[in-house]
Amino acid sequence: MAEKLVVVGQGPAGLPLAMRAVEAGFRVVGLDEDEWRVKRLNAGEPCAEGVGAGALAAAHASGRYAASADAADASGFDVCVLTSPVRMRNGAPDLGPLGSAAGRIAPFLRPGATVVLEGAAYPGTTEEFVRPLLEQGSGLSGDDFHLGHSPHRAEPGNPRWRLGNTPKVVSGVDAASLRAVTDFYGRLVRETVPVSSPRVSELCALLESARAHVGAALANELSIFAAHLGVDVWEAVEAASTTPFGHAAAAPSPAIQDSCLPLDVAYLPWGIRRGVGRGFRLIEAANDVNAHMPAHVVDRLGLALNRRCRSIRGSRILLLGLSPVEVAKTLCRLGARVRAADPQAEDFVVPAGVEMVEPDAAEMARADAVVVLGGQDCYDYDLVQRASRFVFDTRGRCRGPNVERL
Image 1 (cartoon, helix red, strand yellow):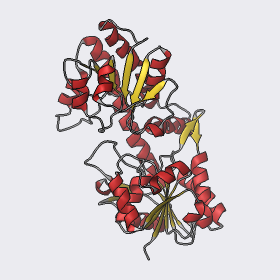
Image 2: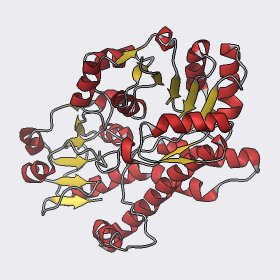
Image 3: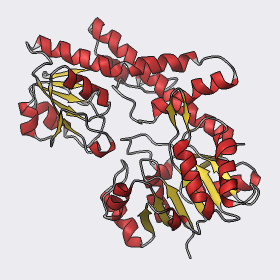
Image 4: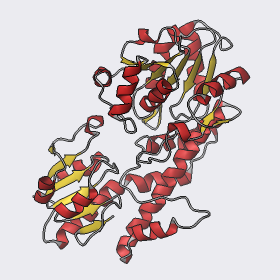
């Protein structure tokens, strides 16, 4: 019989992993506390970027995938991957969701089984927090089962790098655990990258998040200066990306594509203060720059409307994308009539005053401004440029005389 894998969390990290594991021959239970999400998944409706209806239908057709909200369905697992995120609350990591996930699967942990933490966490989380919970809930000692950490790696909207062809950093709390974790991911990905401990793996995840966050902050601050200097920052970004050395491409955006990033990188300043007693100034500065981008987007939109003899108050504004929701909330507060189109709207709490619509040509033509806010590829950007009177593009997707870019 095929080995049983339990993936706790069926969001953007857990669902693609579950689908890839089904392809590799595992029997997979996608465990998620959100019963509405479970119902959607079992009805064949994917609810995470990177997984289409075809992939989900194939997983169901194999007879080796089912989503569940019942922890008892984890019984008898060979491998369990915890994708529960660790958020920041009141300036410190909130380990509640991760602790709940570990506690739910602990009673079903058997000798020889493997548990892997994929969610970003500060160094020490796997060994100091997850391991004791698993031991207490299962009655086993740490030597009876395998435990490790492996960072979740994904770039939303990037069709080239998927789970299967992206190198996977793997770790274990001991040599046997490292072998078990490496063997598991070796069946799913083309290349594994073993490191000496979960602490190294956890810090690797934070380093990758921090690098993306700092790069975005640099591009965002450049975009602010470039607007005052009359320079198209997007042209500069595209030109800089042609260098074959020493350049990591980053572009301005109102929000980091991966919604976990600002939270993930907050672990670093917290962990440095906790362990060393000083701040992490570079990350804190990047956090400050990126946190002010939604307000900057609204300011730029207001100036653009003023040049067209309009104000935000009373204008009909269509948002293509709801993230960051601070933009929609601010526009509503300033008196705009806000419409929004977002295929992932169920992942957000739609702000009061925002009407969800379809992004068709008629809706675009009625808007005083169409704001390209999200970075999804589901929008027809040629149609956006043709049908709209004015486009304010924060993602560099549109060009034309009626387009102003962030």
